[in-house]
Structure formats: structure tokens, C-alpha cells
Length: 467
Image (cartoon, rainbow, N blue to C red; front, side, top):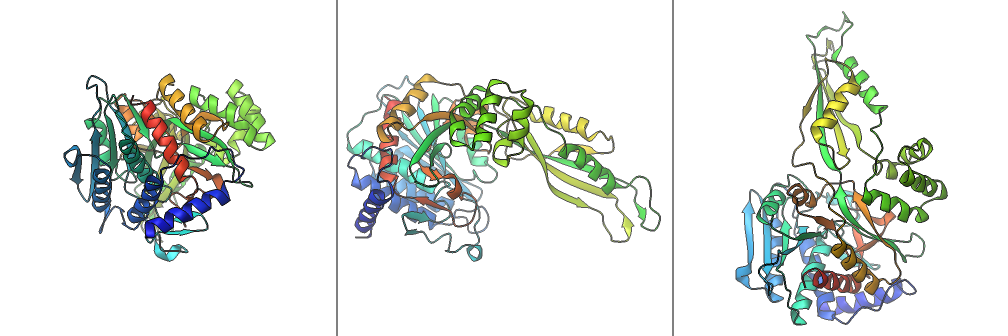
């Protein structure tokens, strides 16, 4: 009964919130619609956070049961424990074993959430005012269950893929990414990876109608560099010319004022040209100018001043932690700082660290690469078959809504596939207002109105790329 009530509520919400929007009437698949939401609620209720009490393995069991109920053979689904977590791989065999498989990629773990900080308990899902609330509602338990429900719907419809369809969920994407790397090694023969953890649509802040949709074909490399200055120290009543904290501070200020060379690739150029019309006039003009000439100083200055844009025009590095000294009345013997960098595709971490060393301009400041769970990757190619499949799926569900590429500033499981030369693309089905993207933040929520259309989108995308 609860599922039936949820389905009716979802239908009413969709009618109310998307009336007049640029979207097609979804096909009838009430069982898949209800399953996606019900399964997402059950998954959110499981606290799949790294550390004591990690319930990621229970999420894997939940997803396996849903896949088996949807027509997957039990023998074709494996759950593998790793440390305090686990990963899941399920295979739907195609008719032509000579074809490389299509991989659908996601993760089951979530970022920690403290109930005392939220308006609602983050691990007690609730649907209110057309939104699903809870940790993982956006990142990314609803997207995961939408994919599971969509595959089940395709099986009920009698679809027969030519190539294998593999759906996999990592168990520590938000932390060490150990399972992410293992999965990429196991599936290195994939033809293409659809990462349903990135990309997606943007809703207008005022009308709630869909503005545009982006897919991601690249992401910046995550890096942490530790800066260290050591000194013999001494008594604070006898100041010396060389002070570890002073030296570190001076180097940090030089790094603060440094800008890495602005640059473009095919993905970001396409994004700037296409998304400019939805930005304030000054930003839009700068986006177009930068796309035409990445050395345009006026455009660079405008985009650099906007926190939402500076990360899109090149590598960024910023100090995130500082520690120094050992007593209130002693000269510091040691001072350290962490520099967190998001590196534009195509640059190895070692090259960026070497550039920072030159900027610091002090041989007493020593740099160490302390990055964990990160590898450098190039952008995925602009594959015509993938682009055509996304265009087809979006046009069928949101006719007339522009579709264009983008680059992610964060790290995802795509990083591990691209590092192994497997093309990976972010292609989430969900639409959000930019002001309501609370991934990793408080009171995370996602509108449920788009669930039926999301299933239409995934059904189209999965079939186009596996036929």
C-alpha cells in the first residue's frame, strides 16, 4: 500500500511542478517509477558512511535483491567485501559476445551527515513538498535506483541487448576509492562507461522549467601537496631572521597571488559557448570571449573573479590547512600547510608540484605529494555514438532542451576508467536548480517529479548504447 500511495503522490507532484515545462509526457511504467523511489528511500535509510557501522554492504544486498527481482540471474551478480565496505557487479549478457560491454557506473556510499545539523534526520528519508530528503537523495542513491528500475523495465519489455550490460556500484567513492580502482581493473575491456554520478540538467531558478542539460567527458585531477618548513627554533625572547612560520606564510602568499595558465579543451569550449546565454550578461560575454581566445585578459579577469567560474578555466590551487609551532613561548621548529589542487586534464601532478615549488621561490620550503585515491586522466573522446544517444534520449523526454558537454571539477569513479583508457561519460538523468544542489551539504534533497522522465531517458540511453 505504501508503494501505491507513493506512486500516486509522485504523479500528482509531477503534474503540479512540471506543468508548462519543456518535457514530453512520460511513458507508462508505474512499477518502475514506484520501485525507483521506494528503493531509494530504503537505501537512504542505510547509513553507508565509511567507518564504524558502515552499512554499504547492506545497500549492496538491497540492490542485488532488486536486480534479481527485476530479472537478473543470481549467479550474474557478485558482492565483494573490501575492508569495511563492498562493491557490486551485475551482468546482463548480450547476444553478441564479441562486443565489448556497456558499463553503467555508480556508488553506494555517502558522505557523513550529522543529524544534529540537519532539519531532518539525514538517514530517515521523507518525501515532502515534492522533494525526497535524505543523505544520498542527490549523491547518488536515487540515480542508482533509477538505473536499477530502468533495467528491470527493459527486461519486462523483452529487450534483448546485443552487447553485455554491466551495472556496478563502488563502495568507497566518497573516500579512498579503493573499490573504484578494483572495479576499473576488472572492467578494463569495457567499450564505454556511463557514470550516472555526474552530469544532469539545470532547472530555471524562478520557473522550475528545464534550462539545459550537460554531460561530462572530463574531470579535473584531485591533488594534495604538503608544504613543510623546518627550523632549529629557539627561545621566543630571541627572535631570529629565519622563522618557519614566517617563511611558510610568505610562500603561501606567493601561491595565493599566482594563477595557472588559463586553458580550454573541446569540452569546456563547448560548455562556455552553450551555457553563456543562461549566465548574467557580464559573465556570458566573458565566457564567449574566453572560448574564442583563452588569452583574453579581460575575460580571464571576469571569470577569475567568479568562484563558480574560476575552476572551469584552468588548474586551481588553494591552501586548506595550516599547522605550525610547538609551544607558545618558543620559535617554531616546524610549520606545514596543505595545498589542495584541482588540475586541468592533461597535466601530471608532478608537473603542478614543480610549478608550485617555483612559485614558492624558497629552497627552505619542501613539497611532498600526499594525494590519496587520485590519478591523473585525460578527457574522454567526443564519441559520436555517445553524443547521439544522449541527444536522442533528451529530445524524447525534454524536447527542445539544449544538450552540451561540460567538465567536472570534482573526482568520480570515471577517473579510474579514464586512467585505464576506457572512455567514461557523466550522464545523470536528474534535473536540479543550481541553488538546490545540496550534495555533501545539509538537508540534501532532490525533486521527485522527474522520476518517470528519468526512467524514459535511461531506457533510451541504455538501449541506444547496447543494441
